[in-house]
Amino acid sequence: MSDNTDTKLDARAFRNALGLFATGVAIISAEVDGNRIGATVSSFNSVSLDPPLVLFSIARNAYGLPLWKAARALAISVLGEHQIELSNRFARAAGSKWDGLAERRAGNGSPLPPDILIHLECRPYATYDGGDHEIFVCEVTGYTIHHPGALPLLFFSGRYKRLAHDDGPRAPDDNLWLHGW
Image (tube, rainbow, N blue to C red; front, side, top):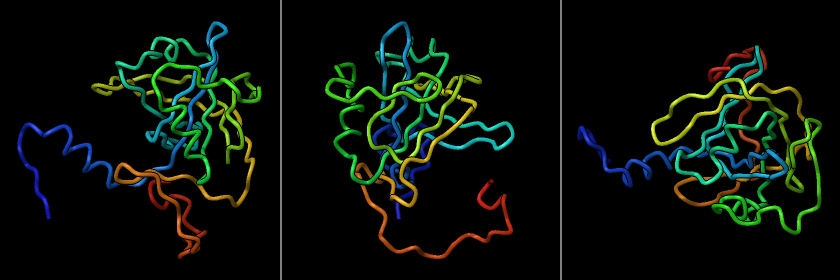
């Protein structure tokens, strides 16, 4: 057991501790002034069903932050367990992330990466100060499930992971609000 109760937390140790929470992996994408932008995030999360809201965060020192703040339409694409290479491509700062990828668009015009599990079409709703990150809350205006039943790519403890192919117990159908929903 490790206990860190110092008033000033060691940033790397804190990051490692947060890494013990498994997340899905998503690519956020948009087009601003003819520039297709995209970023891999593990900070994607649901916020509200009514209105339908989701969030993600981008580092304040990210090269493309001004473009993200100017985007009027976005897509959030959830990656499948076979898409580690695509995740790494969009995790890099700057560069030509879209080179060699087939042109695909969401209904709101946002560019889409290939072979994703689902994409959500969004518009900006609010932004918040998140310390060294900017928090973007987006309203979902539509979505498409591309591969029903496919398994997602996960990130845990600084490594990509896959779900075990075991269905496990199901949450009760009679409780829509279980786990904060």
